[in-house]
Image (cartoon, rainbow, N blue to C red; front, side):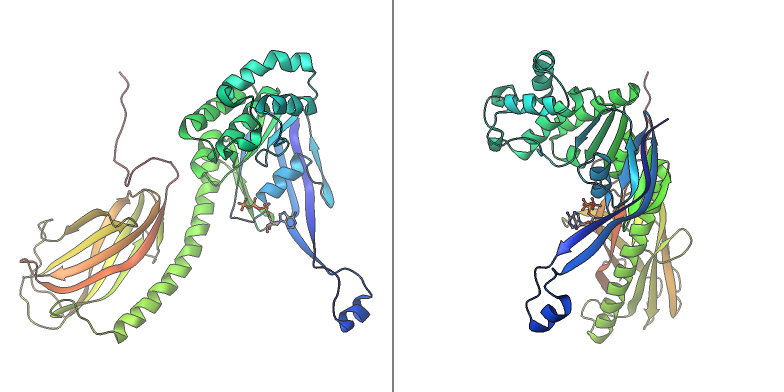
Length: 404
Ligand SMILES: Nc1ncnc2c1ncn2[C@@H]1O[C@H](COP(=O)(O)OP(=O)(O)OP(=O)(O)O)[C@@H](O)[C@H]1O
């Protein structure tokens, strides 16, 4: 038995552009309103089993929230049908359903009564709701004075205490502080054990992976992939990487062209770095990687003078705070470069590029052992890292735990 069935659902938003103003428009449109149609979801089908936790991912504007609103019956489909079995509790629009002039306590009563609870029943639950929200101090002041985090805490506390069969959550977890987020996570894990069906929309892919049994990737209003969170997230990240890549490679081409026109001012020029590429494990040029991926830096050089074996190639990676995350060179790594060809390439292979989420910049250099520069390319490449696990810091340490 499915808790949620979305069958061939299409939603059409009508965007009114006002009445025609010119005589021509009036004659053609005969005083009708100008209406554009926008289809945020097109023929979407999805089945969620009772007790399953589903994560919906996708780019901004892809239709995720619209799908959640349809499931919660805040809006209705233009085609197709949606069936839900059981009591649906939704955390969709932050504080929607709260009256700003009512106190936190009054809003709990109003909210819970919408879900069919009698005053007596709410009386029994209210202490748990307030205690979970940790808003004891503020529970008797109007919610308009609440911060967005406080709103979220109250909304979450009500939503989980009305004994839902289906819980719908839209990005809201991101609002609370770390302590409250942890509490919400624990609560949701408990819900999972109690066979409550959960649908979460989030850009936090790590949370989706941790909490969900299945992930659904929505792209421009259609279901692009359904599967295990790891597989779907990987496909989604690859898609983002591909898109970022195209842009980055385009930018790189422009900057190389600019560089050729510009005169080299750094270094003696006895050796010049003519190009730098970031490659993935298959040797394809890429600018976006997932933490742990194999990657290589390929430095193309041209030797313009005899330099013997006095040659060092170096690399350094900076994050967007300007922090040097890592740097090394052939000399430090005891690579003795003998006679350098007139033209060639140097490859720096990283079996596991373990940098965490973020944007990084690559510098490469070629210099004498003494440090005197032949050439230096600052921020020659920009690349992005995505990680499936949300660790903190700059890079992943190769590690294992032992619990004794
Ligand atoms: N009431 C509405 N009228 C017209 N267009 C709307 C309406 N609500 C949403 N849209 C449009 O529908 C599209 C899908 O919106 P939706 O909020 O579902 O996207 P989303 O995937 O949740 O995005 P995000 O990740 O940014 O929250 C967007 O282009 C949005 O502008």
